Image (cartoon, rainbow, N blue to C red; front, top):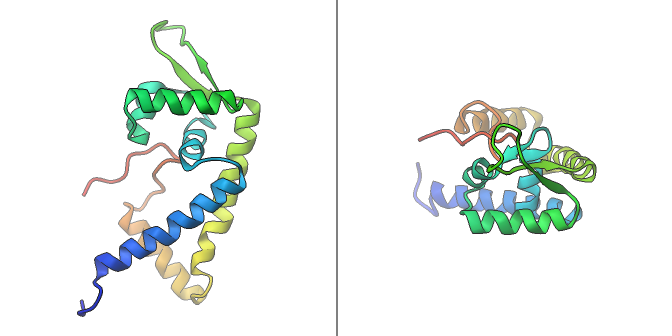
Length: 150
């Protein structure tokens, strides 16, 4: 590595660039990033509140507030599983599924624009390297997987 701002600073700048684009895409769908992540996690299957709290890094009060706000918008609904009446699951409503799917498609289409100035070969290399950094699989809030351990 060469002297200068440092690789760590470059990674921070990249994360800020990605985050700003993601925030804009979420706003275009009238969602906060937390609501968007929640929708992505439950768009294809219901999940328990505890699991969602773990995946989103939220304590119980924060998770309850997020679900309350998203539920008031008609995007998610609470349910009770047959096997455990004490538990609470969160699932998408039809509107939530529609918005979640549109958001997911928009992120997939628009987020890669940040590398449009690179040659096709460099874009493929960047994608390959990013895949290696993330463990070679798509993980994160839209899949519900934990990030790879370092």
